[in-house]
Length: 303
Image (cartoon, rainbow, N blue to C red; front, side):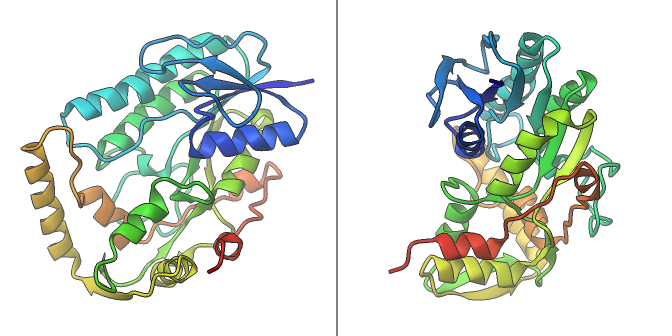
């Protein structure tokens, strides 16, 4: 029986990968601070330790520090300790085993030219600590011969970030979004999970992972809101005004340690610009995204 080590298996993406691996007949090692949903727990603090990967045949690295901390803050340093230094420790422990490293489309250079992003798009100029540390971590992984997956805006059952933040932004039946609607790639966690379990046999390198087709931003947002029983009107805020608010919020957050800004330049960029991932490279390896946003909303409990 093949044994797969899944780091971050108690988290959102990692728990899906671990559960799917067990369902497909893998023996699962859940590597992280807390036990995962299946398999055997291998304790690991990514910010401090080299993990014990004894018995593992392959590794899927989902563990990551997430968020949008103030530049130069202790929170950014803590994020680097996990996303960059933790990657170095993991690669040292992997010692030649196949590694699938879950990165993010936030590593791509912001600005124009993202209406169809291939893996050759420049990786530089990231707008926040998460993007910077994921870019540095994946550079180590690529140099070590790993397969690197770049999803965008992962959503699904158990999502602690994307949808909860969206719902929290609704105020008195109104949701403010920067700029007019654009086309955006999203990634169902099931699609990412399938890629994670398939990618160990792919040639080393970076691969975009997303749903089969991009979504209209405003339509997707309304679909998610309605599915969660939230009735809200979308109002468009001019992008320059949104950027000004984001910069001000970031400056205010710098005065309050241990807090994140309520709005950041990164968040404005991710919502206001068309960002569509070209997934043909992953498809050439036989991977197909079978999950859609509509599948997620249909699966939500009603009433």
